[in-house]
Image 1 (tube, rainbow, N blue to C red):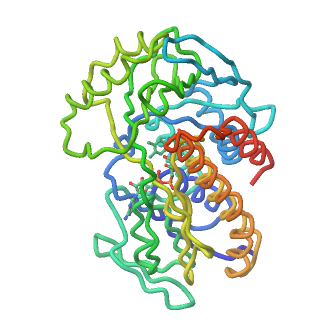
Image 2: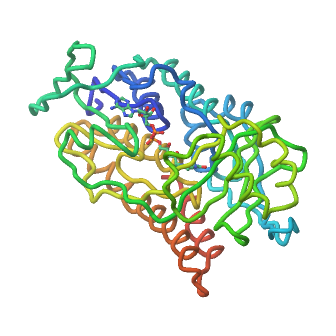
Image 3: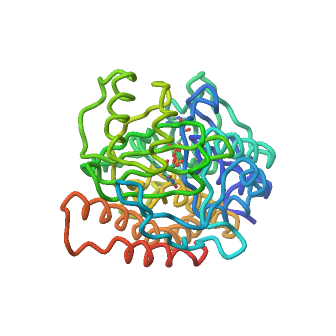
Length: 374
Ligand SMILES: Cc1cc2nc3c(=O)[nH]c(=O)nc-3n(C[C@H](O)[C@H](O)[C@H](O)COP(=O)(O)OP(=O)(O)OC[C@H]3O[C@@H](n4cnc5c(N)ncnc54)[C@H](O)[C@@H]3O)c2cc1C
């Protein structure tokens, strides 16, 4: 018998939908509450690596993801004038029968995950959150933002980097900026972009792009962290275009397509990993709520999905909650910490302009370790 019969998942992102799907398909009564009103509110593009694709396959979402995304197995390294100086075979962290990487529109990924969780039997309420809860040992009594109440065997906080559930269980650790900021733009895909190419030289730390479908891509430029909160969208677009002017080759085609201010986003990179355990009583955190890393290795969502799969499997495999949560923590902490530390290190080397930096070596070691399933 599973450790839980009922579960509340707070947040319908990657972590929340995956854990809901895993539990619901095995008969656990799962409710998900999502504070946003609509799944389509979650925009932009994402690089999904093989270890996350393995999770998508495990929950039955791989074919839909494959149809919606753009798969590739190599990464190009370019210098600012556009010259391709290296073509690297990506590590297939999900195994040889899955692509190394799938670029996707975040909106498509979100829709597929929500559909998968719903098809597995989870009940999803948009525009809803948890107002408060009382974990009184034998169960958690939850009051929702619409005033309704329900009791659950477990509450799973999958509510992202600014997690409210984390606050509610008294964990005071918070994400910290790493010193880098990123401009991202979403455009149609010129024929010159068929995979991710990265440039680690020029005025920015990183300039890169990732195809997300036959007719879409996202491109990004990573710079020293700045206060750009108040910058109007038109100015963000103009500034990103100006920064991108240092990069030629496919960037020349992308620049032509960078015309809509609404498709440009700026954000800081953040880092955090909670000391174990990631739970208090019957309330447990997964995904960005428990650990967040700068996307220098593009593993944040993959680690969130791995947390979710492992938590789901642990809750199903153990008959008591304490053993299930211990098993979850044993399988997750070291692996998530390895990814957070490596992601932070890559960025720090760039900030320090460290002559001894070994970015390819760290990539190989970290991604190599992720080939073993979580
Ligand atoms: C600039 C940038 C680029 C990135 N690129 C990549 C990449 O290419 N590849 C990759 O693998 N990772 C990437 N990441 C990391 C990735 O986006 C996150 O690690 C991943 O989204 C975490 O998933 P999650 O489900 O834990 O959280 P989220 O995706 O943030 O989902 C949390 C959900 O909870 C909801 N929510 C929040 N508060 C509440 C509440 N109180 N009640 C109910 N619902 C709530 C939110 O609306 C959201 O839907 C990137 C991150 C950044 C910042």
